[in-house]
Length: 382
Image 1: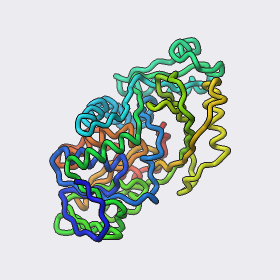
Image 2: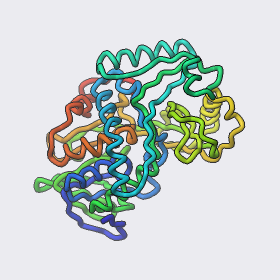
Image 3: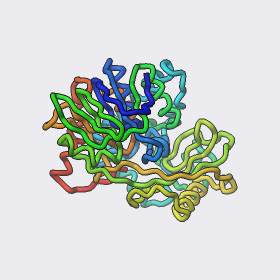
């Protein structure tokens, strides 16, 4: 069962997962599903928690441009999402509000259309099975009548969707509990020491041992990875979000910058800012986000905003995930990405079996952290 630690503990497990956000929880849930004895160490509420600040998209279109294995990896996760949502509901009774009707990215200029056509066309040529449509203004309004006159077109793919990320995190934690995972709250890994074919993790409040260790600590992976011969040069990238009051349902598809949640609120985003570990909101950026949302849907100009937040994405130098097992210390893994919602199904249903002793998924070698030791080339993730 889940254990909320209040004292120093010396615990043993098959696998220690460092990080209890969406990435670590999906991996831990999947490992327990494979029959492993799992302990998760999670920081306190002062930690940077992208799992509680993201946009909730299961988003495929455009991802993987420049690294087709990542495009295939994302697509494979989206295709497994219905199984994950159904299994979590059967196990926990929590509906994570998965909807996959397809998604839209709106265009406000011809240059945006040309760039999107280039990107999606390249992905379709590389992957083959990569459906998408480029829609003109009339076709967009046929599907979403409320869009404004500044929207001159959109890209649409049937692969995209969204979930309620807070319900997803709750479902994963509840599912972990019911599968016997031990969750140690308010604990932070500060050192990992390989020993006797396994690993000892020194926390601030205790020492924890396991045959295998998974680094799923978000931005903390940068510091922890060298302890076990891994390379995870991640850095923060800030995104800001606005939330409105509840609005009568009108937006039945997620879009890249506006979505209506299962509870009726509207979520407006996002920004991409390199500001270090600063997770504060800023009025100029929030104003830009609001203007963009109203430009897409002018009738929302008088909607009341009820909440704002900023969160730090976990970005590698090229924006793509990092998945590795240490060659120097086998049994030590790193799992890090900025798309913890989209990739939750892949982490639970493909990464976890690999860590438990199965075959490495075919897409993963291209996403090894060693690529940053070989080449400094940077590729946009979106």
